[in-house]
Image (cartoon, rainbow, N blue to C red):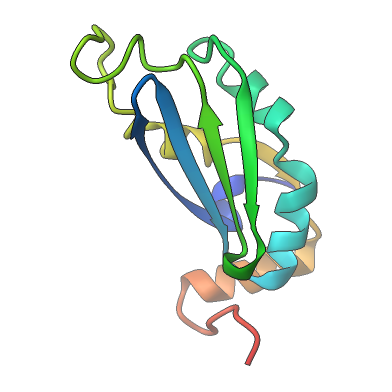
Amino acid sequence: MKVRLERVAIARSGDKGDAANVGVIALSPKAWSVIREEVTAERVKAHFSRVCRGRVDRFELPNLFALNFLLHESLGGGGTVSLMLDAQGKTFAASLLQLEIDVPAEVVETCDRVRTGETSGRPS
């Protein structure tokens, strides 16, 4: 099924000079497998095409079920010199969580249970 990334992950973002830094953390090991396949540097670059002028680097953190993205040339020069409303990239995480990806229904159901506190989503 096609769902927003927010159904199977959480995210945080900030700035590294003129690069936005976005971390995405899967809510379950199975969600991690899906996110690794679906959320590519190319898709992130396309999602942020209006603000990201440079390349997008993707880093995998499998022990955390997480991905980290650096979106180069995305903050108008960085916090102290930028005229952008979000010169520190704080809203980039919320934006990326709107990306639609294909996820098996059972993975979405597991992640929904994690969100409501019915299960941790992590292996025991």
